Length: 135
Image (cartoon, rainbow, N blue to C red):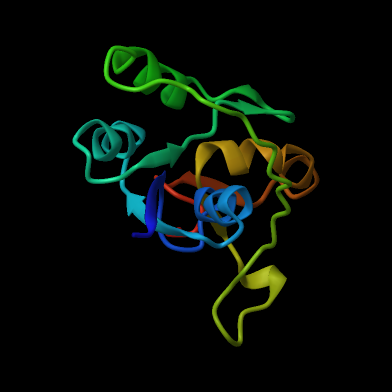
């Protein structure tokens, strides 16, 4: 039986990368829309484990994730921590140029991690999405 591990976001999200990193490819990564849904998958027995971001070395505490964990503390427990390196890239549709890009959509944490980039490019509007991979 394959271990099932939930993560918040779409396939390709950093949470999915963390699942692969932690279980070295031996777990099925199960996407969930919110941190609460991620935890609910474990609490209900639909998943065996979950990965959630709780701290970011650039922006600090991931309050939404930590709040979801605290709300479910009687249902789940933290068993380990991992560190997942993060590197961002600006993607656009084919034919786009950097000058034609008007806004950048991503998770609030990813936008925060790119603060220096946005300081250097004030014209770009930041649009918060629920997930970096889905943005």
